[in-house]
Image 1 (cartoon, rainbow, N blue to C red):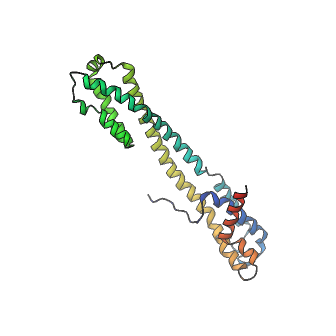
Image 2: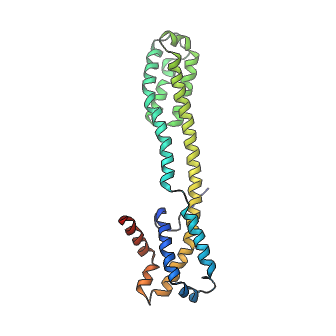
Image 3: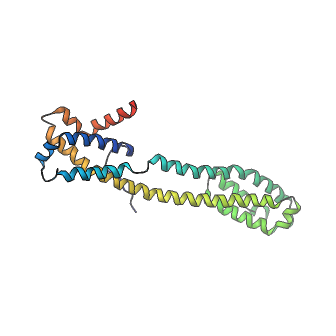
Length: 232
């Protein structure tokens, strides 16, 4: 499905402040707009504009969505940090354990290390799953070399955490894509009447009132939004 693209050429977080400034100018000049296009600039126009502005203002900030994704990333990072030593200890025991049902180099240890080092989450899940299966099949031989149930449980916990977090992260990112598309639809809906105000404001004032003309110039209003934000 094709993503919804913005109809406006500013940052997402700049559109609502820009819409508020434009609204102030329109309310001041409403009589001129009604004289220009009486069928379009009725009382219903401002009511509809305010509803679209309120809907856009209620959207969850992009920074909040990013923060949610960072929580998942941090949890997965914790799994990655704990894994190397657990694999080193297991590798030492696998090298000395006999008999084994699979060769030591096919046990899954090197595959897990490689997937971790390449940040390959699906590959790491698959390698750890194979590793745990091989530990279970060779538990007696490994126990003789010092592998404790707590050591195996640590690897199981790391595997379970990785599966849980990558699944949750994938779900959250899918939701965020849909959420972002929904947000963009709302923002584009707000920009539609704004575009009419820009175009009709220029028609009204480009040749007669430079100050008012700038109030309906996208670039000028955007400069004002950014200046006010910097001052704050």
